[in-house]
Length: 319
Length: 319
Image (cartoon, rainbow over all chains, first blue to last red; front, side):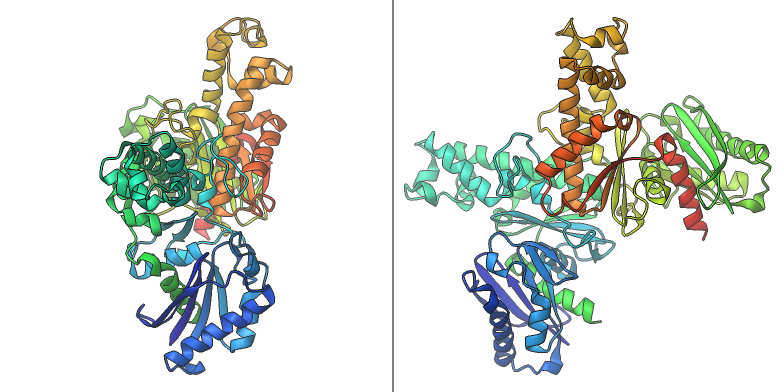
């Protein structure tokens, strides 16, 4: 049987038809429908499903189910996003039911970070481990939790808001309203924000050259590139962010007693610039022997972790 | 069937014979054997079991099992404490096997904070909830985690080291070697340490009167009493500690999506002086609707949570 998986991001929507071994038979990437009126969202999803089926020559009987991943707090039993700050038009819709009715195929709605964790545990970095947390480092910081080989959702599906643990009591304001959240200190947007502020005080910084003199063009990506070249301003900003990320990783190791922590999402592209210092912070801050018995690795599936994880969810549920 | 439960604390050992409804038929409290040579510890436990049986007129056939709770990191499948910083003579002994052999009764070894959480979930504050974390606030800060109605232990039994999550990057040194652990900022010993330091700069503080002029006699207990009387120094110390405790509670709510957080252990005796500010911090810092859908309560079982929880563990395992 095949699964259709649709990973709706803040900017792009990735979708795929995936078999039970994790092979994608057909994939699409397109801009997310972020301005569509809410009432049209279910038809939009159903259209995407029809397109994927037509383009890959599938019949209804080939499909085990559909999974829609959303960037927000999801009530998975109700199949809807309670809160979806970057996609308000997808919020509050009983999407699982509405899409099931339109397509005739059982549909599940899941939190995107949970799907990335499922994907990495299925055929990625955490394959073969029972207890893992997968951090998705992007505009925000999401996390998905696998315990005893299964996705952990908490009492009603809201678990994994690790991006919003307080790491600095009076730290910078976070989009969620709190101060000093991990996300406000260690996400790609936090790195960009801190670097833009620091660059103003460092006219000699390489960041200006890389950003073509434009302050708003200083992204996390440029910060890690400039840090690699030895730029002092960029190194300071990157070091601070990555230390807080390490504190977040040490926290989940202490709390969950894990086999593995996976660092995925855009900022994980910085590779050893993120991985090495996070490992060092874990050795220093997580309790022994919890630290020594947990591995920290980069994700293997890149930006496809969520869409592959959604397929895994369908295959697990349908069997 | 009956359970024998032995909760070995840093100072006192509480033991009891407990039935399947949580009624203690016989209880003992005595100083912990903290200086006994390790080789004599299993006999010491077996003697205690024999005494409990004799004093309550039990035969072997009445017993479902024995549980020994230890204050440390426990490998529950091996039935031993990997690390027991305050009771080095109990560390590394395969106590479950050794006590089973001496008594003829199946014996389990468990982390003390896990037992307190089991007790509160069985017949205490978290009764009827599926997802709870029970903080034990004492010399240190322990935590036990109940997920989907069952004790959560992690990959090999080391979960719940919430006392050692970093809440202040460059904070005070913790006994574990790290800096700024929750335990180093919000435990009873942290409160006493901070108050002793603050009192030196505040000769007018009520703390001196309550402590009979003796700096070392300033305990967490006195700090909460002085704060209740409006002493500014005590209030400042208590407020800071309780805010960090609130950050720890908000962290587990964000991470686990809980129904309930229970505050137990010695410092919970300060009642609303701890409970009210912790609830306020949770409202301010945990993500919505995670915060609104979780309750924070004081423990119902006082110092007996661990010994009752140990009995619960036996009854669950034996059935």
